[in-house]
Image 1 (cartoon, one colour):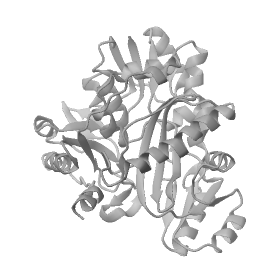
Image 2: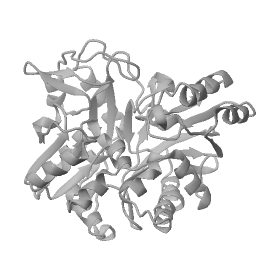
Image 3: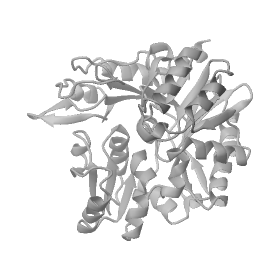
Image 4: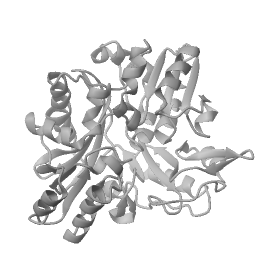
Length: 425
């Protein structure tokens, strides 16, 4: 089969890496891809939002299947565009992708179908939102309604911080039109958990759970990022809690989307908080998570392409899906200044050494210059260590990080520390 993957980050590198192992793949393309992806697939310089150009390319190359990585093109209807041209595309259509494209839609859906989530109110008027906010007790969460590259959420520890976030979203428009409407919701205390699931309407096949680290600095300090690292499995979270999340949250949400006339087909990402009252929804994403994908797919023993094709055919419930018992830990190496502004074009050294030491290195923001890798994004590389347990995988990940260098490189030193603390405590 000829396959086109849409996107150019670490998630897409992991997807391409996984698909490349399938005996059914004849040719892999990625648009636009990156310098790491180019080692496995032919990269095509077409932007993820250039739907007409992408469709023309898919027709010219006789593409049999398109796999969509990022959120923006899904929310804008890229799957609808491919399907209108008769080209199969794995991912939700525009109507179903609204579960990520609008936090207000998502929260209202959960309320309507009594699916556990934080208490909330929604606003499209700044003064009304501000008056409501001032009646709350921090910590409080302020969210832009639309997509904001994983940065449209502020967990405010003080009222001053909450008001600043609200003003930034609704008045200063730091996230553009995404902040026209906002969600103000209660702060949930507990352990975060991410569960990605293959979905083909009613059938839900959960992947192994992972835990992300959003704040930029150790100890969960600093502004939110797209994700600074992740790990799987979660030995400190009771398997019964994971099962409860699937049965009380993910499966009912898929069923609710069917009832709403928006059946979801693709990968549904549940961002959850395990509270004292059980798991509750923080967010839903309409695609594979980044960097969760970088640790989840390395544990997949089955053929990813077979699973995708089963979902496309409405036979997901019959697909054989097996996972390894290994652990995986991903540490994101970021550019100086991220998640704010950052330089590009900085030479990177040591990727080959890290890979020779057994690490998987997924490129998130890299380019080729004069035959070598250079930085080309805020999150530059995802370094994945694997092992028999979290401790071994974590040690291997950080050993590999120590072999890679570029000017201004920074990364969190406490990825997976919560799991180790629970184990040793």
